[in-house]
Length: 341
Image 1 (spheres, helix red, strand yellow):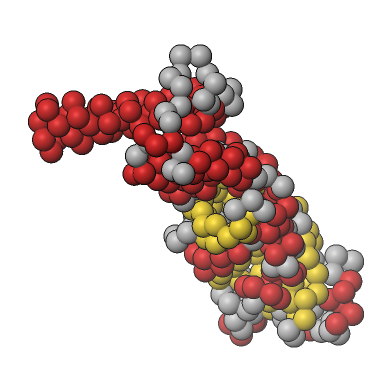
Image 2 (image 1 turned 30 degrees about the vertical axis):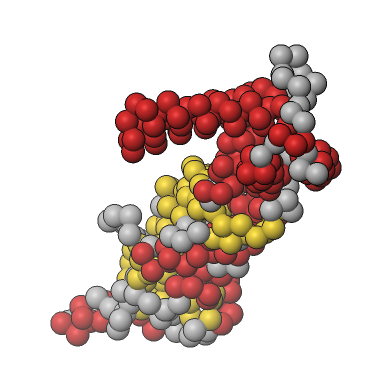
């Protein structure tokens, strides 16, 4: 009698998994030395799926529900292995449970600036971060490609790989979004959609489904941020170059006055402000000599060479930043050089 009680204990009547936390994606039901009894009950809860593996081969996949394990519910497994009628014990297999609920607020970000290619600026470097949501969608593929035969597979073992997939596809997403680099910060939703589209195939190869992707912040390099500021300034003045020059001159006056006050007191401050005002007037006259209120251009013989060179240098900087076109710069350059003749 004791022998029969011992043998009956080796049969499993109920197979189920109650998750205890958020850390496991897959869990293997302990089956060492035990067999599943013919007619046993399998309980698969919502947000779970169960996978039967027999002699190393995936037999059946079960979604949420309660199942009585018989030859009708396990036709594939029945084909793989003959039934042993002794003790009504049909098979000895492994059962894996998978958590299929969404994994929310998974962080991604660029620890270092990522080099991407832009049509307007060529190769540029950016920083970005956000979050994404995914779930296990294909337990069979996830088992064969990722989790394998381990007793359990924790979420932490996969997080680094998925973040790497997101970062790897940033350049592809930028190309697919068709959003100019300078407009990325204002079009984060479009960039997030393109990034999700680019990452989806890589997730699917692991048996995962990418549910959502967000881009919370995009940081431009300092030099491109300056160009963006200039572009915003142009928009504020409606593309009027004279007003933009006046705005830049006022900024230069403030900066020079602050520097002069720090280094040389009020006298130096007055000198700095005077120089700033003079530079602003000279730039405005050089760009628009016919504007009302502008003094007539000085005769070429009275123009000092350092002033002309300083003006050319300033105009060259505006051209490099994309504020002046090559034609505008060439015209003003020729006009200023004539004053030196």
